[in-house]
Image 1 (tube, helix red, strand yellow):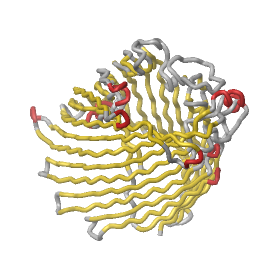
Image 2: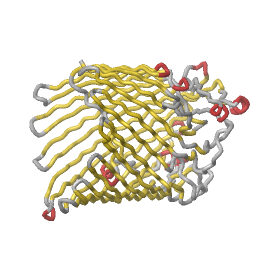
Image 3: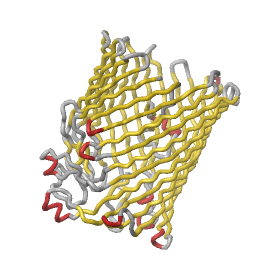
Image 4: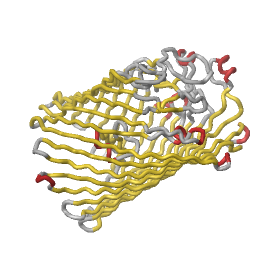
Length: 550
């Protein structure tokens, strides 16, 4: 990845289907010209090597390149992995008005990890062993996308994207002997193993027409588009024993699929040189289907149609100060296993949220700033528990999230700079249901980051601070962490923690750069979450590396 783009507010209406809270766009790197070899080594016997090679024609009309990475590690808590990742990119200009691009990627990772965390006694004793040493999570992914852009005129551009991906995920987990685990104070396993093995196929298209026009005698930028998507999950459950080496009886085989098509339109009205208004609308219809092959191909399906309006504005209050805001509706469909629980259409509404934000951003001398307040009001939240004992999920009503965020960056001089951000969410609660009034799980009131950076003559360093406030592990807001292996809902209160990282890099020459990092500088021991036990944050670790551009 080269960068991560975050789209907030009504800008997310152009994407989907699940866009509650915004859109995160992971942008892959375009290989640089020449050949770059980099490597790093670090704690837990971590080793990683990356080869990047790319080039362009003299005219600049075509480029191509490949990035290959191989990494392996014993892993924190002996959760080792071996990973290979390959990406190829190429692009071509077709005349003066068209361009065509292709990206192909392949990824494989064999990881010695599991849902299991430490039981409370071992966590408090400082244990760092792998609580599920024989569980493995085996993944691979192949994907490609083709994108085309054509300028139909000086004012009109059509872009089209076709994409496909296929992911397999074999998850082999040994069954637990609960009484023996309770007696031992740690997980004890039987000789039986379950493979929850799934593959995910996904393909679709996205076509966008952008154009300028002069409606109402003012400058307008418009975008209209259509998007189609099909996803399918092939889910098998294999029952085996230690001696069978990951082969056995498939006692549950189901196929979940979803198809959606969306139409959207938005228009930016430049009302004045300082004020711009952007209304938009997305209409999305989707159908979900479940087939269980081990139950005589029994089938169920459900469908929904959503109308999602949005409205955004920007106002240049001063030369370097802008006010921005927006109101929009977003949704996330209930997944197949919930919407079609028991092979019956549960007639569940999608999770919908009405969202509002208002902010101020700008530059004042050496200071760059952005501040915003937000409110997310959910209807039809899908939660555990149901008045019908045969069902596992239901629409349980509303949840409310509201707060503010602030980001600052300041150039101190002498090569020093300071930056940071803080998010404060005083309200994040269930508004109805069994947990009414309780705080939403994994929603701390405070999140904060800060960085003190220094740059001078090819040397760059940064001291970074990350703070996460206290949070709960489940909707009941229970404070005590379970002490046994009985299963059920794992929850409890996770204390706040603050972490420090130190990074540095130095350009030895125009071709050679060396770098290093110390993560979790103070060796803080903290809880990151619960599932089936306690997930522990990584201890202090070191890494060193070099990058050479031939």
